[in-house]
Amino acid sequence: MPNTILITGAAGFLGGLLSAALIADPNTSNVRLILVDIVEPKAPTSAQAVTIEADLTVKESVDALFKTEFGVPDTIYCLHGIMSRGSEDNFDLGLKVNVDSVRLVLQAAREFGTQPSIKFILTSSLAVYGGPLPHTVTPDTIATPEGAYGMGKLTSELFINEYTRRGFIDGRIMRLPTIVVRSGAPAAATSAFISGVIREPLKGIECLCPIGNSMDSPELDLPLWVASPQTTIKNLVIAKHVHASKLFRHTRVICLPGFTATVREELQALEKIGGKAALDLVQFKDDSISRRLVSSWPSRFDNAYPLSLGFLVDEGGMEPIVRRFQKDIEAGIA
Image 1 (cartoon, rainbow, N blue to C red):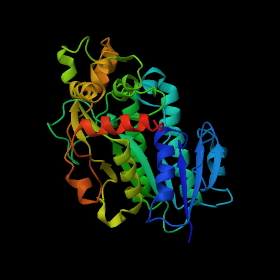
Image 2 (tube, one colour):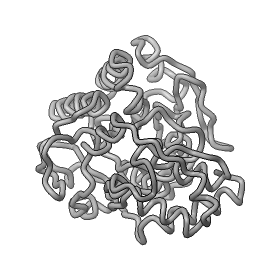
Image 3 (tube, rainbow, N blue to C red):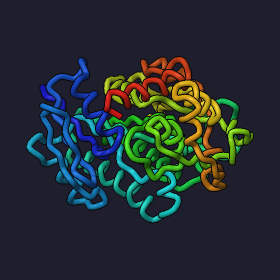
Image 4 (cartoon, rainbow, N blue to C red):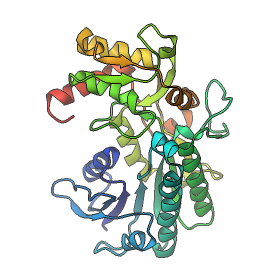
């Protein structure tokens, strides 16, 4: 039997990596991909794929995704969205894309799906948290976002939990750590600098760190919850295979494993791998909005639940991640 997988946001950084990973997944045979984004995505070489340019805020465009030559998908990865700073700066657009369009995809899955229910995997964010938080976030920690992006993600999470409860879909909500290092151009995300302060200097390009005004700034001790793109993609593939019976009955939220690193530890890893010349390319200009948003996000999670489900965590802190990215640059793939 074919495995038909729809990926929204497939032209983005994670979407491209996920497409290739699903094709290579030994536990998923005969993969057929329906790849969609606001710009037409590229399909992995030799993949059975349909690539579609579409506006997912339009119902007719969403419904058409379930009527391609591949038919109704078995699994949906909902990756599209307006990122954190973009949502904060354009509130209405953030709602339209991060909430309204996700609901249209959910409704289409409900309308066109049959039993067994379509697996619906949403990439959410630690930005759903805010306010006073415990030292370590657990599955019982209440989400109270302090930004438009987190509010939009949490709203879509509630829809997915309800659609799952009613049997319309088989939902899985992946709250991602901040991904570091992202290749490509910087995204319109508050967290974009977390990759930028590694990516640009290793390529010999100046970059701006919006946290602190110098390497001596105490603001650089701001802790972050991070994961590498390689481990994150592996975990998104694993999400497809976790049996529904292993998940909590009352919520389909899973905070994917990560680890804590400070902005200073990031920069120290940059200097160790790239030398002082790379570190000198980092310029500092503290931005109060960016610092407020990032500071509202939790930086420590209890990994026990996701690890019990078979998800993976990075080992060794920032240095292996920075070293891997440097090798990717040298190989011409970053």
